[in-house]
Every structure is written in structure tokens, then in C-alpha cells.
Image 1 (tube, helix red, strand yellow):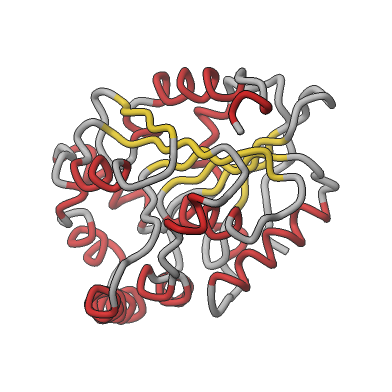
Image 2 (spheres, rainbow, N blue to C red):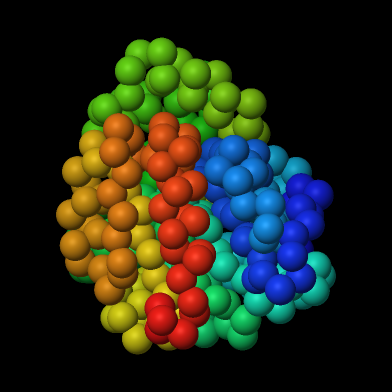
Length: 258
């Protein structure tokens, strides 16, 4: 199973909030936002290759989803929402498309639903292979210095970029590389048709400065929320508003969101 922080107690009447961080993050990533939801029981996971789960290896999305199922069972979580960012959001999307029992809904931030053709997949596979080689063989500070120059992070200030480089460089490069390739966007199916048929309520969050994921949001069968004064990592850049949007979502009766 996937390792997690200490479960946070809440009302037994409320479903659990299960938080999934992004690539190179850990279970602390969502805690600032999650602290505002003390009425809900909460579980913050370390994904395989990250944090206390760094020693856990997976080969593909089905393996990650199976580990997520086992983790939920181990905590006796019968009703839950998945809250995921980027890689964690993609795992949440894949998991939802397997129609798991007990899933009450999805709140996903800045996560890609999948690539549409083999040419795109081949390009992404080659890119992720190059990044994985760098994570395995180069100092993480140097790799992340280039990682945060990618277009999706163009909105970051120099100070924000340096803070993220220092934070992410605490990881293990080899386990990051393995997880990057196992859960590459090239290995993920295009989930758009399955998501359109999914019964669970689906909410998509993106930062107003994140042009890429604003376009992706328009392609999804989801209720979308734009977060002001934020880019790709909206829950880090504007946690107050993300928490407000989540509060609005979670107060909706389930019957009204289906």
C-alpha cells in the first residue's frame, strides 16, 4: 500500500478527503489547504517514488490504482473524494475511470486527461526518457533548475522558482525517474471518453495564468474553477481561494452534482 501521514479525524458523517500530490512533491503539499476542512476526515498520501513511499515502485497506472485501492481498504475508507494536483490528478482521473466503489467525486487541479494520438505520445515518451536519465545521473538542483524553466512554469518569479528547486531537490533522483516513466503521460490512456461517462462528480481547477490547462479545461466534461493570481500550482500560489472553491464544491449535495 501507499504510505500516508497520520489520518486526520473528522465527522463520521462526512466522506474522506484523500489528497494526491504532484510529481516531486509529497504528502505535505496539500496540507495548508486541507487544514480548512477539519469537519472532513483527511488522508495525505506519499505517492510511489516520493516521500515515505520512495521505496515503492510501480510499472504503470493500473499498479498505482491498485495500490490506492489497497491503501483505502487498509484505512477502512468506504466513502471518499480524491483531490489531486498534476501527477496526483492524473492518478485520480485514472482511478475514477475504473468505477471504484465509494468514490464520491473528484477535485483535480492542473492534470492532463491524456494525449490524443501516437505522435504526441512518442514525443512525450522521448521527453520523459530524457528527463528520467537526468534525474538518475545529475544533481537534482541542476535538473530542477531546468525543469522549472518549462513553459507551464513561465509565470513563476525567480524567488518562487528558487524555492521550488530547493524544496524538490530533497527527493531521490532514481525513484523520481522510475515514477516519471511508469506514469508518463505517454503511458496514460486518453481518459476524456471515460470521464464523460463517469458517474462521479468531476471538478477541475486551474490557475488564471496557466494557459495550457485553461485550454484543457474547455475539453473536459467537468465543472471548472479558475483560480485568480495563480499559475500551474494554484493550491500553492493561492491556497485561500482554492480552499474556498473546494468548500463550495463539498457543500453541494451529492444528488445535485450527479
